Amino acid sequence: MTSRSSISGRMRLAAVSFSAVAGLVLTGCSNGEDPQGSPNTGPASSTSQTATPTPSATATPKPTPVYKPADAKGRAQNVPVPVKPALADKNSKEGLEAFAKYWFQTLSYAYETGDSRLMESASGPNCRFCNGLRDNVKNAWQGKNWIVGGKIQTPSVSGKFKAGGGPQQATIQVIQQEISIYKAVGVLSQKATKPSNTGSLALASFDSTGWIMTDLGLIR
Image (cartoon, rainbow, N blue to C red; front, side, top):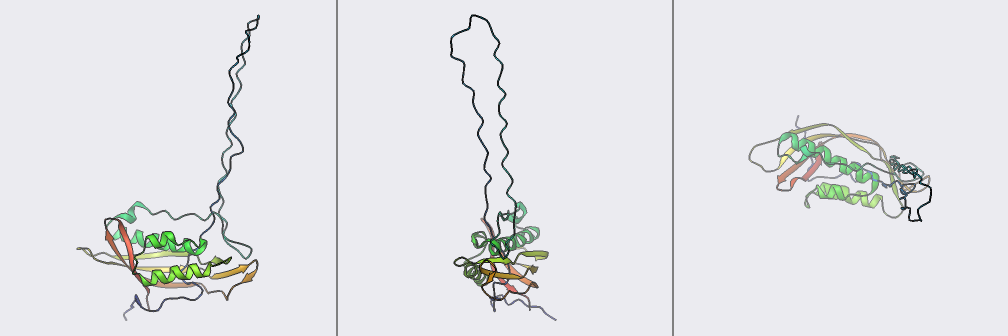
């Protein structure tokens, strides 16, 4: 039996299958500034006195932003931004696999936050599936809408690296949470999309700028 990707075939464009969600990164505020002492410029006292040093105030550490996933009451907050590992810039089988995992992290981030820029920067302009996912995310987040769920995990990634360059192939297990789109507190915009566990076939090319996703599809 042969499993074949619908690389140029139909995309899952339901409530936005394949997932990612982004959030609001809040920066903590300091509670004050270190006071600076002023030199004593007054007249010298007739009685010699030893000045008592004023202890410097200890700066209040900034609080670490806490990640809060989206729920029926509002959007996610402080969603961690995906960081591409150095390995994902290597032209090797391991580099291809690391890039594929990173790409799906950027997609997951897009679902969770509505910000697809990282995913777009890692995708080629002619990747139809990538563009379809981007459009779905933007449509889901239009106006005051937000996504609950949709986070992606890729527990299994297997690359097939061939010498001589050209597009390289990777097979990825993609697990995605249920997706719910809300338009107001407690009010769904549409029926929730069920969680999924699917196989995906990715094609990526490597050049002077690193890896780029050139095609993507579901394995049927």
